Image (cartoon, rainbow over all chains, first blue to last red; front, side):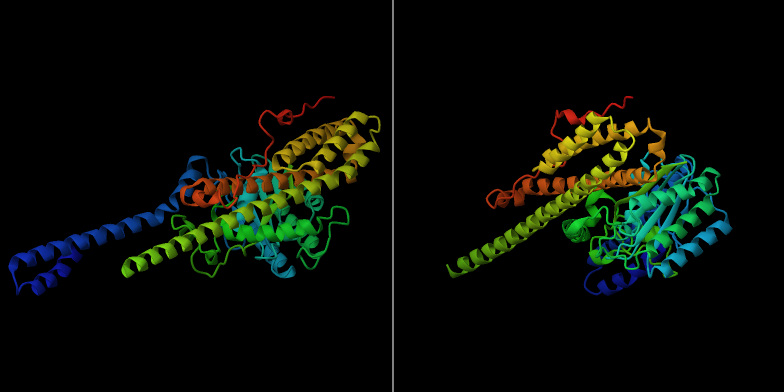
Length: 295
Length: 186
């Protein structure tokens, strides 16, 4: 600490010498104090940076790794976050490939997979919505996102469908997907289950090539109607302007700097993988569509 | 004297600007609440649209459970006639109870439980109920924010005269009978 101070203080003392030695000493003292304050501030900032990550890790360590405790982990490249350690490297790779294929086939749709051991008593619907809204899977404005959440010890599953895919993948279809992967889940073959889920979501999403909400594609049975559509659009505007501390007071999305309200205290920038150009979720919204199941 | 006039003008201009900002902020929040409300309504409508399908499917297997069907129909029509958020929330909770009893009936009919159409309707119903829960949470958060801001000091001075009134939460009124969870009995 003292090293950088003395050389800086020295020129001050010299500069102030001609008029009077006493003011010079005072000036030097002030310079020292200023430097000290700057150093203190800097070290404080440095100390604060890793602290952003600390709570997440501490929480994970306390309740056993792999538990979802309400804190949403950062989205990882490949869109697979396996906190439970349930996926083998091969399964992980197969899954990220499948997800990439889905994104390519749907022209930008994003599906995430989150695997935890337990949800710590949080209802699976709440947990999935929280994760999906934080990750913002799907493109902004198109909302073509989906999330598969598995809780291996709780034996719960949820397929959360983004607003833009609710037409192509109504809840009944999401329920079909959940039922289709239930045997794999029962057998504990998490990788196969997740890959199958992504594949089925892709197939369902492609059944309706333009995942906008322009056509009443609810199998003609459950039309949302013009008002529903209007209110969804309206809801988007509201949501976009109030999102950070709006619904549920939950975290802002990682990739939303244009919103201008990225709270400085949130650990987003530091807890996200830096470099590599990973852009995270695209800004898709979720309204609670999808299906849950137990296995 | 002239100097005082200038200062007064500047202060007035600043006040007017600040007032405009406050007003616009309140308008935005109020609009936000209204839009969240229409979100809820869309979801309530969605659920109401599901009901006839569901009832017809169950009727195919359990046509003699007339009372349950009547309860569902009654709750559904009450929901359609609800005007305020509190009324709608109460009617919605009543419909939830009636639907809960309808689904409980299904437990007694293995064929119905295995019916694919019924399974799908159940998915849709569960999904819609989840959506209602989500939009209700979003709506209540917005109402809370709005209600707090019309009562907070700078805005509270203009909120009253300009007609910004407290908005209702989406929840059944206190002491309402429908808050009691339906008893599942067979």
